[in-house]
Image (cartoon, rainbow, N blue to C red; front, side):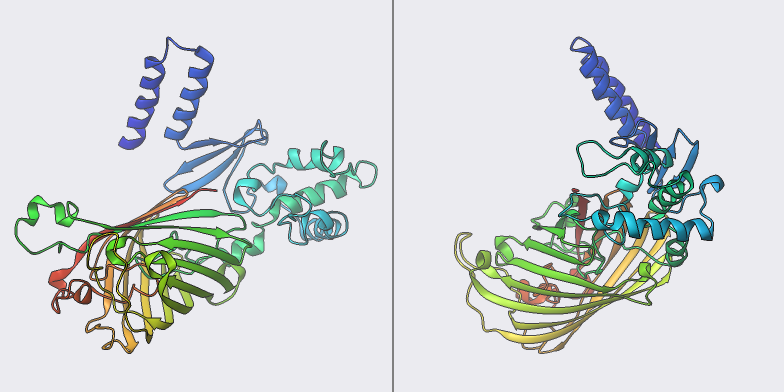
Length: 441
């Protein structure tokens, strides 16, 4: 509440500071800032719909019909509820008349340039009035024809209600009960395997302050739990090619060998689709010195299961071909990392997340290396724990760990080999770190 109040006053103050400029531009800018401060988004292409955010949830406000529903939930106005017969009629009409351009599931076709009606940001614009108007009159500048005279008013209303229900119908709502939706790509370093919407783009930042333990050592009270120390900062991008297939590219810095990771992931099953488990297969290649040497190929199966809508467990068995011991790169910054022998390894990551508030979760994970751990210098498993905050389009995790690596080949390694100190991966060697994820589109 205090943050919102501050942002509102900041927006008003900005308008006052720029009052001498163009009044129209200042008014538009202030409106944008005030809307953001109040958690309000205007829906492009709609003059009667707003999206309001409260406590990490989004609500669609339709001023024309005076209805409010959660973004991603079913239509809540009883007058707009579909009867079984109207739902079946609408689905049949959509299948016959609309699926050629919009796809059988209403997710759009790239070849036809049509939109994904199951995307929450698109669904927010699909008021009954807007859909009925488009079906009756068509859309100029597109291949969308007019169906006036071809369909009766009752048929037009049935298909418009079906379009509004796509991605949020009663069956989807039932399946969503008791299902935990991971807000981030990572528990901390362990992957959650969550899927991405088609064409969605995310960026991930990770910081690991591995050189300074958070709870022991000299004068650490002046170093803010190690946050004043040197960080291993990594970042990457992840893109949804389809609703099931995603690709990503990720890089870690010179201090840890300059690895670049290229990955493809495919979601086989999902609880939101009524299946008992979330299952994702991932294949990645990590190459050190900016993808020029010390290549490691990784195969992962990420399986998760909701305990309730507030908690989820994660399992990530990982087989790595030609893995390398995790070390801090010696020599000058510009020097190449040393060529280390490749060692095949197998690790089994286990993690969990538990929401203690609607937008706040406690997270924990452990990643023991079960095959060739000793050869990689791993004497104690990598483990982490922390707290995770979700806000619309963002996730922030603050935690403690004994592992500085975040690419697949390095996440099971610990500070012991990284600092060449056998006791550095004990609880006294835990260090602070954080993750930041943001959706760009």
